[in-house]
Every structure is written in C-alpha cells, then in structure tokens.
Length: 158
Length: 144
Image 1: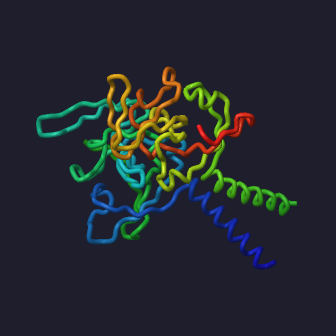
Image 2 (image 1 turned 180 degrees about the horizontal axis):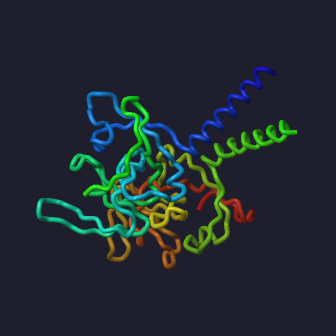
Image 3 (image 1 turned 60 degrees about the vertical axis):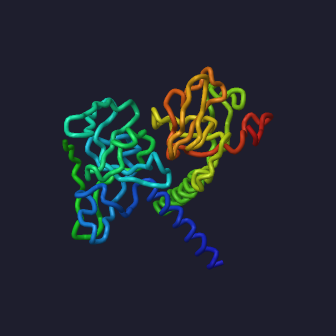
C-alpha cells in the first residue's frame, strides 16, 4: 500500500511539473554562432543556457527587438533562436550587395526574424517571413554559466 | 476548515495537471465551415491525436489540424495533398512544395481557403492528425 501511494505521488509530481514547465517556461541550451555576440560570444567556452518564457507568446505581446524561439520552417525538428526585426505591416529592407537593396512588407500574421550574426545566420533573409504560429517562446534571460547571468535587452539595430 | 479548502484546491490542481498532460497528446475539435464537405460537415466533432506529429509520420491523404498561417489563434482542418519535394497542379498553376512544408487543401475546393491562398504550410504549424469522427454518432468513421 505504501508503495502504491509512493508511485501515485511520483505520478502526480511528474504531471504537476510538466504542466508548470509547459505553462511558464523551461531552460534550453543554445548551439551555434548565429546569435553572436548576444548568445555564445565565444565558441571555445561552453554554450549558453537560456530561459524560455511561454507566456508572452500566449498573450501575444512580442515586440520588435525581442529574442524569440521558433520552429524552423524548413525542418520541423529543429528549433531556432532569432531576433524579431519586423512585425506585421512593417517594411523590411533587404540588403543583398552594397548598392542593391529590396523593400519587403511583412504580411499580416507573420514576423520577420534575423540572427544577430549577419551573414552567418539562416533566417528570414533566406526563407522569408515566418508565421506567428511557429513562434513558441520568448527569451528573456541567460541563466548559465553564472558569469554571463543577465537579462537580454530588447534592441532594434539597423 | 482551511485545511479542507486547501486540500480540495490542491487535489483539483493535481487532476487539472493530469488532464493537461492528456490533452497535450489527444483532443476533440469541433469543425465549423463547409470547406471539407463532403468528408466532414459543419458542426462535426473529430478526435485528434498528436503522436503522428511527434514521430513525423504525416502522409498524403491524411486529415490534419493545423494553425492557420495567417492567424495563429485559428485552427484549420484540411487534407494533406503533397509532402515536401512533391508538386501539385491545378489547371495551369503548378507549384513545388519546399522542404519542411506540406500542401493542404480542402475537399470542397470552391469555398476552401487553403494552400492555394496562403501557400505551402510549414510542418511546424501542424497540430495533430484526425483519427475519427465521434459526432454525430451515426456517422462515426475512421476513414475519410
């Protein structure tokens, strides 16, 4: 009987933990160089762990300049972290070469996302704007390693 | 008294969490609109499972529920017409489905707002696969 109660408690504990992490957020490791210098500033040291917050996506409060995590539109098993450059209705300037630039309007229901490491990032410049439904979380802070513990600034750069 | 209330709240929270863990993988949806006639009428209830998405086993001809690419609060129920790498044709329009996307179409092509309107849908937007229709009971069916 005591064993059965223990199994039941573990079962409920898993369920509660799962629900809480699913509602509020989890911690995830970042791989790759596409977000340098914000995340993973040096490759030699261990990669950063970031906190993923699910609530801003649920309440639709993503702003320009926020760091977000989304499912890659080209590979559903891959998850990418990028910065929101344009919201719906914004005009984005695409720079191909020095003098050749294109203007694009972000359609309704879409975001324009780009990595901070220009030219080394697989982002909206190659696959176009992504649908809002693909965005799963906002990244408000770096939590590990302790020396890099900080909140992530929401910045809009040219 | 307080202990009783606290106990009740905690027990309901516990069962709510279990409920959440179940609805994460299966669910019941009500379909509105006539874009899927004659397979599914407006007002039918369908049972969906999300394991197919987990194991990436979506095939041609499956009925799937996906988030609408144009409005992330809205779900759409459509049929998978082509997977990535395949191509679709209607009249003189010819489209190739890019990597990581699927082509969704409604059965009632005259009124359906589908991939011919908003283009191929990324696989990440697919929410689940329809298993069976559970309401109305007389029309219970596993095959669509």
